[in-house]
Length: 448
Ligand SMILES: Cc1ncc(COP(=O)(O)O)c(C=O)c1O
Image 1 (cartoon, protein in one colour):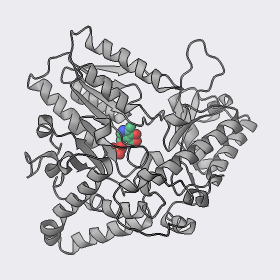
Image 2 (cartoon, helix red, strand yellow; image 1 turned 180 degrees about the vertical axis):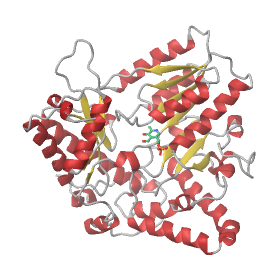
Image 3 (tube, protein in one colour; image 1 turned 120 degrees about the horizontal axis):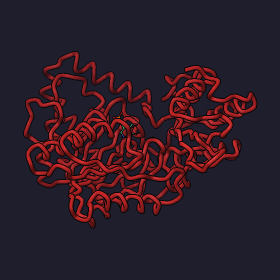
Image 4 (cartoon, helix red, strand yellow; image 1 turned 30 degrees about the horizontal axis):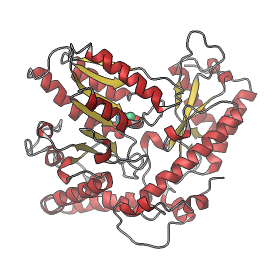
C-alpha cells in the first residue's frame, strides 16, 4: 500500500543529485510534517485532483505573505531594491531546473494560458505583417487544452491561418499510435508542399484525457519535416515529468509552477530558445520595459502582486525536504498513482486509459459503463454529485462510443497523486462509485 512512510523510502537515483539543492538536510520531512504543511486542505474532501489547481504548502503560503507585507510596508524600497533581483533569482533557479542554456531564455509569466497567448500573438503578427501567407498552417493535438485551442482560434484562424488537429485515439496503447497520427496530420498540413506549417503546438502532458505525449520524438519529426517552430504546452510539466530544454529541443516551452511544483497561484515559466524569434516575442501587457526582451518585459507588467514569482527558491527548499527532491517526489507520485489506478480499475472491472509508462502523476481510470455517462454534461453532473454527496473531487472525461461500440466505457476519471494524498482517499472514491452502481444509479437520474 502507498503510505507516506512508503513515500519516504523512495529510491535514490543518482540523477536526483544533479538538480539545484538549497539545503543539505539529512533528515527528510516526516508524515506528520507533510500533514501539517497541507492542514489547510478541507479534510472532508478526498482531493484526488491535484491536476487542476495544484497545491501550496503552508510554509510557502507564509513566505508569500511575508513578501506581500514587505511590499506593503515600503513599496518604493521593495520596487527599487527587491523586485528585479528577486525575479532574476527565481529565473536562475528555473533555468537550472529545466536545463536551459541561459537565464535570458526563461521568462516568468502568470500561467500557461498567458504563455500560449504570448507565443500565438507572435504568429498573428507574422500573418498581419505578411511574413506568413494566408492558409499557412498551425498544427495542434486533438487533446490540446480547451483554452489553448480557443487562443489558437483567436490568434491563428482569425489572422488567416489554417489549423489542423491531430486526431488521437483513446484509450491509447503506445507512443507509436500518437507518432503515426502526428505524421499523418503533418502530411495533411503540408498538402504536398503547397502549404507551410508555421507552428506546431504540442502538449507534454495532455490534460483531458491525461496522457504523456512523446514530445521529444514529435519535436524531432517537426524538425525533419520543416515545421518552422514548435511550442510545447507543458502546463503540468515541472514536478510531474522530466523537463529538460536541451533534450526536448522545442522553440518555446511553458510549464506552470503552481500545478506540480507547490507554488502559490499563479506562476509559470515560458522558455524561448535563444534565436532571432525570441526578440520578436512580447508580453501581452505592454509596459515600460517593452522591447527589452520578454524576460524583462514580463518582470514588470504594471503594479500587481509579484509574490508568487518570488517564492520559487523557497519552494525548491520545500521540495528538497523530500528524499530525492522534486525528482524523488515525481517518481513516487507516479508509482502511487499507477498503484491507485490499478486498484480502482480492478475494483470496478474496468481498464486504465493508457499503459503506466504513458502517464506521470495523473492516470485515467475507466468508470463502470452502468453509470450511463453519455455526454460532457453528464461528466460535470456526476463530478458535482461526487463532490456534494460523497466528498470526492475528481474530474471526469467523456469518451464517446464509436459507431459499432456497445456497452463500452464512456467515462474515465482522471486521478492525481501528490505528496499529501492518502490511500483512504482513493478507497473513498472506489466505495462511492461502488455504492452508485449498487443503487442502480445512472447519470440520467441527475437533473441539469
Ligand atoms: C495542458 C494544459 N494547458 C494549459 C492549461 C492552463 O493552465 P492555467 O489555467 O494555469 O493557465 C492547463 C490547465 O489545466 C492544461 O492542463
